[in-house]
Length: 365
Image (tube, rainbow, N blue to C red; front, top):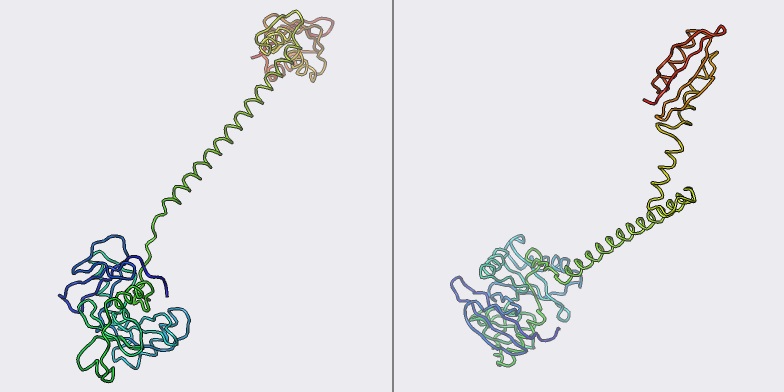
């Protein structure tokens, strides 16, 4: 059995339509308040109490297995004691009490009506206890008034107190009426550790998953830390690349200064100064070296062609004095120069010593 609850509310389901709702507020092991109607919500758990005349109670030795397996075994036990078809009944199994376990049998329709009526007033209790099981299991029979209904409990029985029926079950022995203190203590014990909860199987209360805001805040903080770490990595990578680029630029400036003349003095931009110097050494256009190399490569395959002189002009043009065997070679020579990407001017060849001699001017297009 569990410890006594600090605060709970017992809400008695009306035995008949039109009967008032009744409730008891349990604090510690005593009744702190009572009233009719719907109790005010104060955060305390609400335990619904099913009328004694609506629930048939049995006791039987059932295997200590899962609740579903025990309920299946209980259906077999109570099948011969009920004329109602099994599919119309709701069977619930309680905790072990000695060698026997309590079994509650109630109409499935009635069970659904109770839960719907509770939802209609804004309540969805996790526990529904048959009224007789609020009384203690003692030797003989005890009696008490619960929610406007007289209830009797025996060692292995529980039922509504009705004239004629009670004497038949008790064998003519009058049940002992519980004193107020004993009743309140029994109520507190039953609420703390219900011997039988009818909310099983198809009527099991569905758990509503509450949002764990503390967990949400922790996850948000972790996500923020991950984003900050990613940003820090990106910034570190950018800084490393920037430093490497600055280092390479400094090395290039150092190499450029070494290539400049010693009398160049202090130069603000060594790389630019080196480019200008190379342009001066190379000459205008593509420069003498590249222009002459490309022109000679175009002339060399022409059979009988000989270069007698080269004249590199300040504007980047290259004058070529060449001799060939005949007009065919002169034309082939000019065609190859054009194919090599040069513009060719001149081309007036004169006969001298049995060969043709002329001067061509080639320039980059």
